[in-house]
Length: 149
Image 1 (spheres, rainbow, N blue to C red):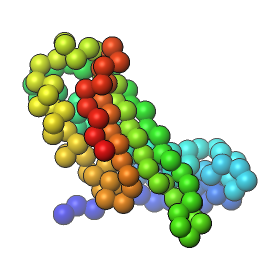
Image 2 (spheres, rainbow, N blue to C red):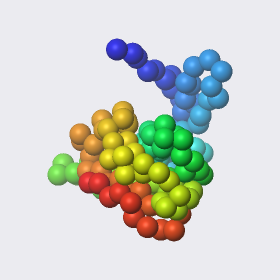
Image 3 (cartoon, one colour):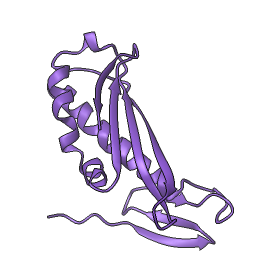
């Protein structure tokens, strides 16, 4: 088992400096008004970034394992923020869309890569246990190749 840790230090109001460790640049996170001044990504945006990055990495790895070049990949993640039964704001659902940089026809073994890449995403699979999650992969022509809920 390994441990991942970050350190947060309040700078002002709801703005925090986030430290990730030696030689990794710090990040400023902040809440939107009226709580904060929107001087950095919000916690919900950071969660979206973590999910998108975690999904993109294993898909890229799986395709490169077959010596394929899907670059440049893009990933767009939307989080549905709403109130739960107790009236508290929560992430109710997320939808990640990965856009390949090439047409599907240019990639070999794409079906094998698409069938298994999500299983290797630590963050997304962990979040999926608590939040409704949809993952879509499209190619550069807009063809839907994978749509998993």
